[in-house]
Length: 415
Image (cartoon, rainbow, N blue to C red; front, side, top):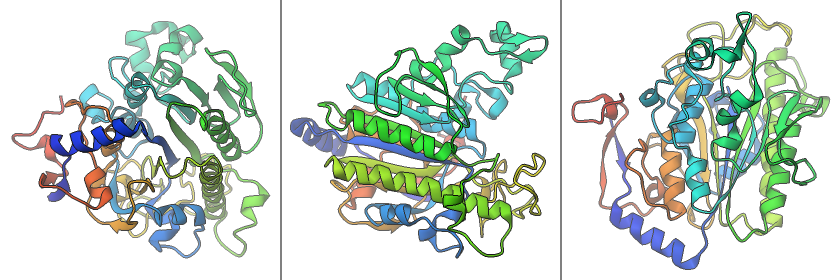
């Protein structure tokens, strides 16, 4: 299947890059990534009546809402590897979660931005380091990570694979109650190498506070920042506080109620970040991207959710999110697994908010961000710069792009 895509021509790139560099107004960039959130659960799509995402809906009205946005994998780790490298993860053998970690040979988006003078920060879920699911890799490459047949992380061995060694100057890494951080929630710098920290509060609120602390630390800097906020929501294990659960009264599956509450917490956190950008008077020149890493896991097969069970039921993999009306779910190469909610906002450049049905992919984030920052394109990247499309101007380089472009005759081989 062919789709029309406006590629970023060298001439157009040079024009916009020159403008950016002359004005010395490189944009800040924030990527907000949900975890296992189905496409149906963004309110502005008007797919389901029970979802409440007022802040994300408002964000879409300041930029571009994509109806046909895709990720490169229906699983979290490979999808994130694609987003953070701008390359199909199959190019470096990261087809599924057990194929990790992210190879040290890969250059990341924060690597590129940091080299260009950006302050870089990461918050939340990483999942690109060696872990208990990458045992085959550990046996071949780092056997010291295995003790008595079980994965046993060792800080010095893990360090090269962690955010601080993959382009992020500051980090507040963690999914549930444990965090590895080099700054605190009051904005105080800690040991640059990072320290472990325990926080028993609701994880979405903690991750929001960490993102806000980073923005406050760097809103007044002379250099721009790049912040990657990877919320661990609404991924299982499900949890939410009464503050968010109370927003969804009435009869419904409890797993659904909890997912709605978690998404509401995520939405509120993004709203707080946007309000802080406004307060610091940097919203206009900040690119804000929102997406999910893959579709919702339903557990029932073929797009049907499992029956409702207590939220602590580890055998039920339905996280309460939905992919309606798409076929499939997380783990499947069907729309339900790889078609996700996506928004891009940049008020300074995207002056005509609208909805775009032209298919795009998460690999497009890297070349788009790099072009906006005035950084020359790299031929190893697999995506395209979306700025001509986002700005509404278009250019003469429009041409057909296939969803299978790199598998077709004449395309660049994946391996």
